[in-house]
Amino acid sequence: MANIAYDPLIISQPSRPFGRPGGVLRRLGEWRRRARERAELARFGSRDLRDIGLTPADAAYEINKPFWRE
Image (cartoon, rainbow, N blue to C red; front, side, top):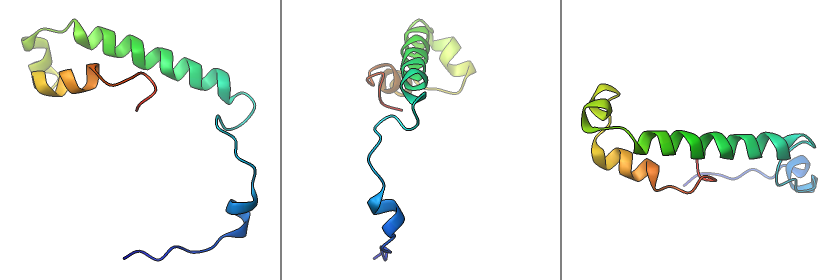
């Protein structure tokens, strides 16, 4: 079982869901990129998937993930 250390600096910091002030735009860009890449992956044929080392099941798993999931 892992030991969890108490760190008052981590616990006392306010929560920032998107990090630094510019983080919102960065996060939106990241989500847009993921959605675009997954849409492109959906257009790949079985030969293309083999070329990049993915099975159709791997591709389906990635394609069906929501854009906000890494």
